[in-house]
Amino acid sequence: MKFEGIYTPVITPHREDGAIDRDAFAAAIEHLIAAGVHGLINGGSTGEYYAQSMEERAGMASLAREVISDRVPLIVGTVAIRLEDSLRMAEHAAKIGAAAILVGSPPYAVPTERENALNALAIDRAADLPVMLYNYPGRMGVTMGAEFLDRVGRSRNFCAIKESSGDINRVHLLARDYPHIQMSCGMDDQALEFFAWGARSWVCGGSNFLPAEHLALWQACAVEGDFAKGRRIMSALLPLMRVLEQGGKFVQCIKQGCEMAGLRAGPPRPPLKPLTKEDKRELEQVVRVLKRTIAQIGAEA
Figure 1 (cartoon, rainbow, N blue to C red):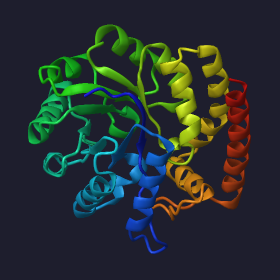
Figure 2: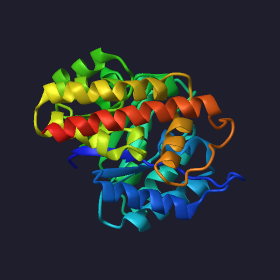
Figure 3: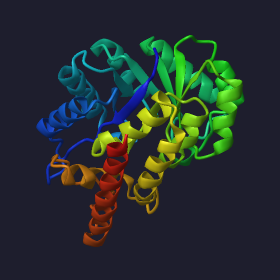
């Protein structure tokens, strides 16, 4: 499978009592497809998978597949503490006809490179679908290093990696030593650098509510190769990325951004709490300036 373009890890809208709002979820998917994103991820951290039961996770994956049909690829997240739960999600992804699965390290366990690779290979066997790896040591506690990549490389299904370490040296490693694994940007404030090193896709939570602006950066860099224009767009996006990545309020900001865009998102599930009024004002100001600036850049083309 070739990963090309913007892949949105879709939010999970909630009602005020914390129940999943299935209609709002379907509306979010329709909004993203209409906006032109290239693929959707269900069961990512932006979708609060960690706060859902396994029944909810499987149900949301099925609903996503039903709404999307074959219009864009659906990638189903399999990350879980227990291997049995990851296997269940992998098997379910295959059953519903997902295009690929997202495979990360099991949180909290801190496995060795060999143990982590065997875990990933077991998940791969359960689905036999294309795999996008998810390297996020800040959440998982371990890095998918060279030994891990060499071991999982024995399976043809491991074809991409969402790199979210924040370590620019990892970008260099992947681009130079593992060119057969498609590198996907998973650290928003390094998107320009990822594209400069050959990345063709970007998994970005902010595209839930600003798809056009994220598509603009991808188009400038990955399609047009216009990095002068890309730097201007990236410069406009950076204030948003600082708000999203600092302060531990990523999910809340994404959901508030969706509300600002006219989509029902609702509150996050505990232990997370909604943004304060001050946080909302800061986000609104940043988004207002960002949208105006990128629209001006686009108008000059």
